[in-house]
Structure formats: C-alpha cells, structure tokens
Image 1 (tube, one colour):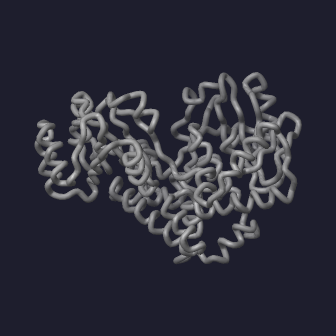
Image 2: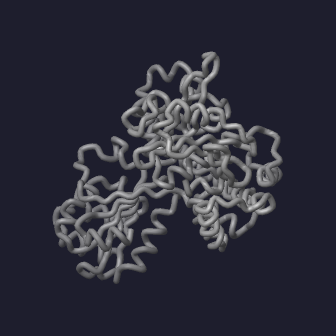
Image 3: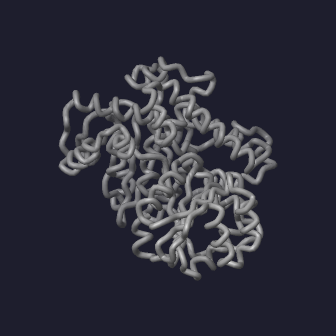
Length: 434
C-alpha cells in the first residue's frame, strides 16, 4: 500500500480485493490515519441516504466531494487526503467513476471489495483500468505469531532454513504445537482476536461459524440454487477422499448437468473464500499454459475455517476435539488438513496452485505431486505428508521423469529439517519460505 502511494502518486486508485471479514476495512483505515492529513471512509454496506443521493450526480465531482465532506464532517485537502470506498461492489457507478476521479487528481482513492467480478456487480458499467489491484489474504503464520506477541520465531526459522540446519526434536515438537494452534484458530482477524481475548477454542469456533454462515449467504446470493454453498461446505469431505480431483457429481448429483459449472466455479474463485489448485497436464515451466480447468482441487481459503467445516456436525466444536488436534492425538487421518494449510501458505506467498498426477507402471494407481512451484525456469515439486513418514516415491519418480526441469524437491512433513538424497524434508511451519 505504501509502495502504491509513493510510486503512483494518485495516478491510479488502489483496489484491495479479499474475502469477507479478512480485515480489508481495518487495515485501509489504519493506513489512512498514518499516511494522510485527513480521510473519508464511505462504507457502501451501510451508507446514509445522502451518499446515495450524491452518487446519482457523481459526474459533478465538485458537488460530489462537497456533499461527502458535509455528510462525514471531514475537510479534505488536495493531494493530502484519501477517500476510501469500502464494499465498492455495492456501488458500481462509483467504481466506474474512478477513471474520472483519478484524472481529476484531487485526492487519493482506495477501494475495497469482495465478489468484484460477479456479473450483477459489474453489469452495465465499464471497469476502470486506472486501478492498482492487491489481493488480501487471511493472516499468514508470521502475522499470527506477531498477534501473539512473538516477533522472533519467523526470523529464526528463516535463518535455520537458509543454513539447512536441524533444530532438534524437542524444539520441533514445540514449533509444531505452535503451528497447529495457527491451523485451528486460522488467520481471520476476528477469530484471532477472539482467541486473544478468551483463550477459549470453543469461543473461537463460534466466531468461525458466524463467518462461514456469512460466506454461505454470499454463495447463495451468487447462486440462489444453493449449489455453490454445497460445493463450499463439501470441501473437507472431498479432500478426505484423497481423490485426484474434486468430484462435483458426488456433491451435486444430476443437477450438475444442468448448471453452467464454468461460471459457477469462476464466481467461487472470485469470492476468495476458496483456493483452487489446477491439474497441470504437462509439467513444464509454463504451468498456466497446461492448466486443466476440468481437473482441480478446492481448498478453503482459511484453514481455521476449514477445521470448523470438517466438524460442522456439532453445534460448537468441542474443546476436547481442538485439544486433541493441538496435541496431534486425534485418531482420524487428518492429512487433508495439512494439505489445506500448505495451499493457504503457498497462495499467501504469491504462488498460483498446480498439481500433477500420472499413472504408475502397473496403471492401477497414480503418482501425485501435491503442488508445483515455478521458480526461474525450473520447477519445485512438493509432496505433503501428515506425519513424519519419510517416503517420497512420487517426488523421486517426478525427478526421474522431469530431471532437466526440477530445481528442488520438497517433502513437507512433521519432523525436523533435513536432506534425504535430492529431497529437502521441510517441516510444515517453513512452507512460506519455499
């Protein structure tokens, strides 16, 4: 955000996209307080009638800004103030007018929103090209540690990773316990705040259920038939099947045949509540060129929400379940939870998500690389294990098949950092460093 302010100098508006409740409004207002002489925050989810009256005549910018200043009782100063349009998707005419506001160059402009590309939110308007776009994700693990008052762990982990130095089993156990707390609470600011205030994981779970209910309502607005909501809620059960793709038919049945699935899935992806990993049909460096839009996996954008969805059958996930998860003593195979958090961490680090499968020599099974990263002109395959299990057959076979393409191979698991042949064994809490 600061880079945008300093380098663009009002030549574009800043558009921050993100899922509901990810903290967009809070961070934008904090930025405005620190970096500008004054600001006006117009929340289109709760704007007074006077704002909507002003919007009707937005072509007259002098009058529009004058009315905003009277309504919000804030004096704007030329090139020293910012106007924030919160939930901009609810005011498409204002978004269209951004082009003229930027050209006017009186103030800076920041827009925040979710579901920004949904057809009904952009119908009949011209999307401005004068936008610098940033995607905001749930708090990553480093930000979560900051919230807990810990600013030492991640710099130390970076140092350990760079030197490829093991830290010992005792330290690993504590680091994993700390990381599992992040998996359970998640990175939604409201859930993190509930944990800090109550130290009660059942209270955190209730907060997460409220957020999931909001997401479900949003999906029903996108798709009144309820199919998008059903696909979202089925993510944990679909991942638990350990299949090589999300099986839409198993969730929607025959009704999937009468649905424009491409549009529905695009809308779900645009919500930023879901992370999609697409099958790369050819594992060469240009992964996007070989993306198979018909073969994909879905992950919940926040793993804390994922855990709550996985135990949705209880009114409030009992603390005993959380405590067992925290101490890694819950009997069920929870490999899919680890896969979800790896997807979340990779996405937050700026990676698009791809995976690759190919048949074993017998043809009865498939090898599978869970994630593929593109680095320079090479690939880095990743396999995720939910335990300390050290076998990495798929990685080895991938390395043989695409030997000239591979830069590094990573096995993500629950033990200490170490090298095993050509594979680097990486503990879960270091995934953001890959």
